[in-house]
Length: 264
Image (cartoon, rainbow, N blue to C red; front, side, top):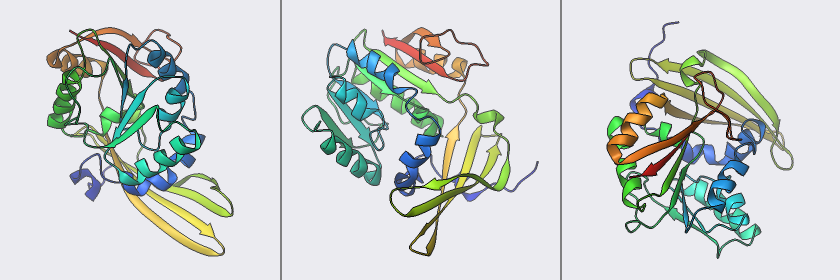
């Protein structure tokens, strides 16, 4: 299928997330849910020191990792996402055990060698749509980790196989009390740049009032081989590549691609 490139393809991967904040938890409750949470909790449990989560968003991973006893620091550039995470931490009474920072993962605002574990859950590195941004992030991560520190990276593998479509209703249900919500989505592949662009239109109805919320999200396809070479250049050595969150072996058809690497 041939399509005109959408305007979103000209932007950066961080754009759209402020608007997505209101719908992120609702959508993920129907998709990824909590299937990866225990994996990150296990990694954090054996970390000898504070844990850093890249792109912590609304606290989907931050809160349960904090509940498991780890001291976790989450960083995200989206204020609306972080505001939701703050409310979750307060409800969980974790404000002493977890810290949220608004910042750019390409330039981490932390001192050298602070974090023995850095987590990059659920494709966060794939929102770095430009090569220089990925390189800057990996360099910044290496700076804040001690020698032997562990870097966990979760990649979403199916992006290049995502079918293009336009105006498809993919989800519907209720969000909170009295609000009906549905997601009408269009997907475009920019294969030359290895990008998948999701044009989102959330339709909410509350008290008879119907509203449309539009934004776009963009993700980059990254293979295990590509990530391996970039990690090596940044000073990391891959320990293992997993094909599920239970520690199963990886192959190219696996639903999950998880890389565990150590800083040299």
